[in-house]
Length: 465
Ligand code: ATP
Ligand code: MG
Image (cartoon, rainbow, N blue to C red):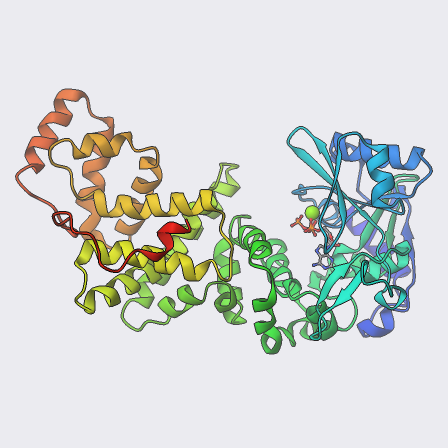
């Protein structure tokens, strides 16, 4: 079936093939009728179909667009379904009781069905058509600060990021509309930015991250013209609001292709823009190689969990990515001689998180867990008296234990400690008592918590977190 679609596409797109993207931009609409493509309504979730049909029956155009169409054509199951329409956001709100309008920069309608959200975007137009700063606003560097100029479907296609993301499934006759050669690029497995790449990256630097993400997720090649400006423009990512970066970081590292994504981000020197401290720790001649292996193991575990449809928590990922910077910062603070090992760690936790928050705004509910995971690393070697029982009751014990086990895969000296906890948590009361008595002779390793002494340098981030 796929071959059939693509041979038909080749004929349809013959005018576009072999031409450079700017030429291809002279928009040609290629329509693939239902009987010549493989996308079926059965593969589209019920809520998305409801939204599409209600828009259509109310007299508006309604298309499934973006990852939903792309992934179905590739035989993958889409992460979510996005809808594009000529109805304005306010109209969409009137049509759906369960609708809320979100986003100032890019106004969208979210239609809620329990936990499921269908995103409905009104067709965007060119910015030269928008003189009202309420709708269209651009920074001196060309970044779009507001992208709410409405247009028709042809313009909307050109405003999307990659050709493979500008395919529209029409609910009125189940055909697929391709304006930018996306079907051909899907077949050729190419990530191709629509329009002039430098302008498009300047408009929205996040597109650089998206290029890498799709290349890794879909196992496709980024074309030369789309790849070339990334490295020179990489620092534009620093302009992106830290809150948006949090969403992007999750998509990059928690979508099941984290190991490959990290490697490619580092190749383009993009990772440094998101996690400057982590990149510096990777580059540390002494500590860097082990830390890189540690992060790779952590991301490989996450990728495996995603593949098995298990839950993944962003906090664990941040705890792992910032573990190296924490070690280096703690060492540097301790070397100044003002604090002992334990207090140096406390100060370093605050410093590292505070610095990270300037590029990625990690919500407090996650930084609290990051701190718990890190603190448990200090506490888990101490098992005498009642300590082991208390730690077992800690509500982040499981995450702390998994983190310790991950560390032990790099540092074999930690293996006996991991084994001890593994046995202890499964043991009955009598066996646990014996285990605690055995270690109460003073077998602490790594961290010796000193008698209470208030650090003179106040752990600065504590007030903010
Ligand atoms: P996935 O949902 O699998 O991550 P997606 O392509 O659906 O991939 P979304 O973030 O859901 O990605 O966006 C939906 C669609 O909106 C995209 O396919 C693309 O057409 C458009 N889009 C999203 N972000 C941008 C952007 N920064 N610039 C231009 N178009 C964008
Ligand atoms: Mg999507």
